[in-house]
Image (tube, rainbow, N blue to C red; front, side, top):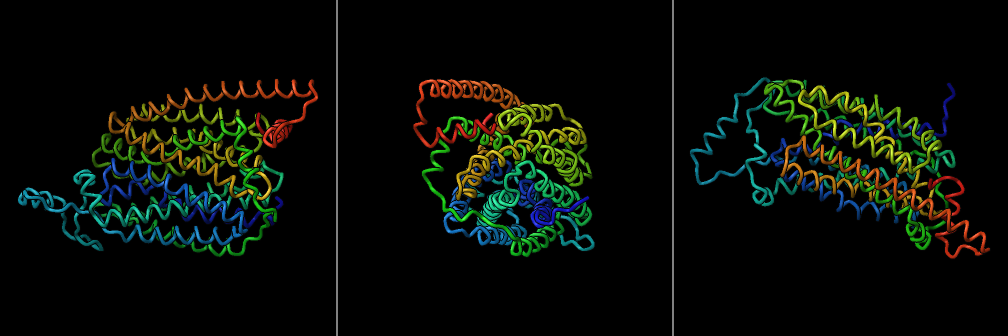
Length: 477
């Protein structure tokens, strides 16, 4: 097997970088709950973070393109993630203050204390549902935790913008090779998530709650190694400076706007899954067996299945699927897969049944994400590579905020099972709407081009010229 040494460094970056986030990022909602944050407030946090980070993501993309400082922004975002992860670990738990009913509070606290075990000191385990939202907002521990979570989120999504921009600059016109690079990140994520989950279970034996010290250690070590890799990464970005008018022209095209809206919908689906799936797994496990001993291991296995058995194959095949059926029909398949996946969550009563459901993850997230990144690169004007990726990334991660908000509201008014069922049905309905609008736009565009050629009229705008070019290379259909 011949190794493409020119693309080897970006593969290594994806592998190491996702090894650094796999043990922690998917478990952050669970970690927040263990620190004393209620499920309602967790949904608010994961709603606010994407919207606040939109500013940092779009600004980072635009500044990188305008000043040609892609590497510096890349390294800065990695450093922000490292510092934020360390801050999350050292943030104190949020222990409820004593109320006027001192005797009742004392009895409640004593029931949550235990005798010291081997290497573990006795400590109070916070009940996340015992504190009101107002009380949490008055605690410095909450705001410290929120700022650290926000920092890692901004660093995370800015890193994604930079790595996709650099990856596409390396593969050039061979867009089908994107998935072949990105799958190494999936490999790193899956392996580190399972290893981190197993180590946390082992390290936390005899403790009242999980201690994520092994996961934090893995994250800091691998992200530090990635700083060295990115610092030595060789790449070239087009010397042409970004033209804001050309960027605005692209987003006046109806087909591009449809894809941008669909990216928000996909992000909302992912946001709901990322924020509430592992919480649902914990709840189902407790209902199945109140002393279920394999919760963290199961959560790690779920991430492993998502990544290695589902996402990796679809990242590898994504380029071929897109080349065969086009970006729009790839999005349509992904939306249908989200519909099936979310509806399946409604049926689960045995926690181990979450494992086969995650085999749909590749066709839902994997195919949708590869299609989004490929489409953004295919329409980007020269000199605006990072900006275009940032705009689509902002739409995706802004959608995750919508998913957190809507998901939190659905969890409040109905059970978690029904919330996922509702989201699944909504995805199915949107998939049909998306297909119908796409067919209307395609037919309208073809009619306009035919009429224009018959009348011998040139295109009236740069946006129309870009549409004609995209139609010619099958980027839109």
